[in-house]
Length: 261
Image 1 (cartoon, rainbow, N blue to C red):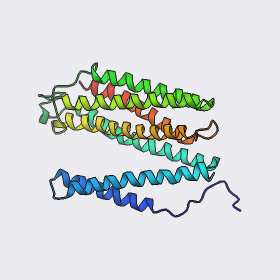
Image 2: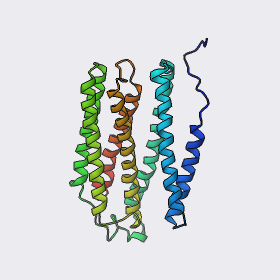
Image 3: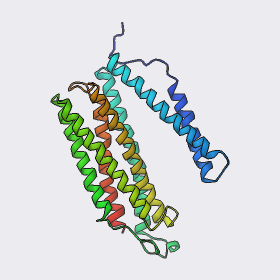
Image 4: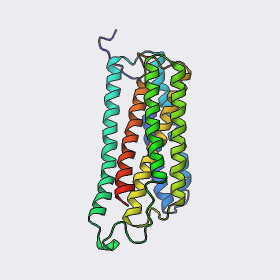
């Protein structure tokens, strides 16, 4: 009989497998950039392994929460703090790239002729696809809030409708982002502008994809009846992550698309 509200997890193989998969993916990706033999295969195989590890690890956590009842209030509080710290680390990651873009625009070097945007760069119209994507992402933030409210009042159908709307809006956003990449007049190798632009928008796009998967898992769990008004931490974490993605995009739109042009 334990006298505390914390869950001491059983030994798991997934952390070491995830570490090996991450090592293989990054090594293979760098090797593929340098056109090494079999590097692309290593990156692809490692990515598949990471996806599998994520699925089974997530499955184990849900099993501990839903079926075994190990996620007490103390455990949930610890998970919430962990998510907050993770988002803080992501904020610092984006801050570094925003700093690089801002510094380069405020003090353009002689290497790019001392002007910003650099000569030869045809910047994108901020009030075209970027503005449309801003409206789409803000609308998805509202639909996530709708889903949260529906969970709190115990309306499972509304929760599912709201999550479907959010996932569809996220998919539309990603599609427009891909179209923007395909039609842009510059690449990641075109001066510091191209490097910072694609790093910032690409990193944000990766977060949108991860957040979309997160919300899809919440939708499946809602269909299985696992979202209750008094126990829906998984959705709260997904909603917190999604609002973080929204805020980053707003800053990105103002700094990179509007001010940077």
